[in-house]
Length: 203
Ligand code: OGA
Ligand code: MN
Image (cartoon, rainbow, N blue to C red; front, side, top):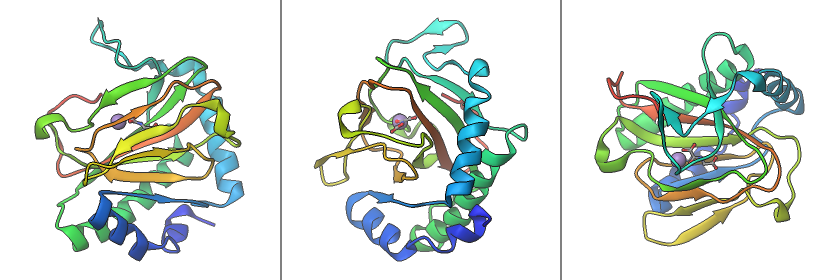
């Protein structure tokens, strides 16, 4: 099944309700096993091309130790996920007038010991990221492997979200969050739904 048509089966009403009330939503069993399998394959067969996310233009930041690969036309399986997020964006635009125009995304790989410290994806509204999404790509995960997404909702409450396989976390890009130190290889796609073609750098 195409993820785009699968996206139509997502519980959009629940997503909208949760985003409205808490600023974040989590959905499970997002895609077919076939799709997830081909996504894992696409991700793992490109791991050698991943680059340290904490290094930008030669400047090293210690806030994160994961490695990433930006998604473009060379990654057709991941592109299908982006297409599904474009469908979701239309719904979010209708519900919340977010003016989302594009989706930007990268694969991320956290090897054992890696983390992403507390941050916002859109600090001081300095870029045009409206909504952040993270899809967990690895095929299995255990609760004691760390690597949780810890997130403060729009009401100030903290939540711990397990990076369960085939799960999609969706949250306002201005919310504080972090990735706790992972004990195993943790694979994901982070995608941002953006309100324009920004001149701001990716990162
Ligand atoms: C990010 C991020 C959270 C996660 O990539 O900016 O916060 O659970 N990811 O991977
Ligand atoms: Mn983030």
